Length: 119
Image (cartoon, rainbow, N blue to C red; front, side, top):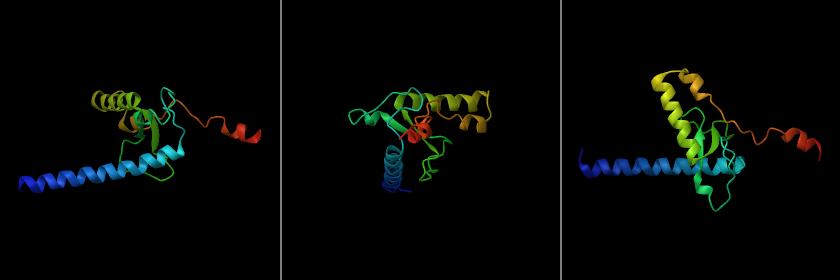
């Protein structure tokens, strides 16, 4: 395979990845409040670029439209989550299935039902 053909393939793969990411990121930002699911840091338009979409099952191709595989995390918590996951897989402690089901510590909808009943 020629070098230019390989470069074309890599460039196309990157474009496809960026398009896919843009789609689920936009959906996640519409579904969820702009709050990190770990540290509870709040975001606005000025710093929204620091809020990322984490795939709970670590499969970036699993993007259900209901957002059930997404979690909004700040860049720092997102990096930490992936580091912890890699360490658990590499050094043990939890099985891969247990590590994948870590989930967030912050639930922005925790009291939503009672708040809705008060209206």
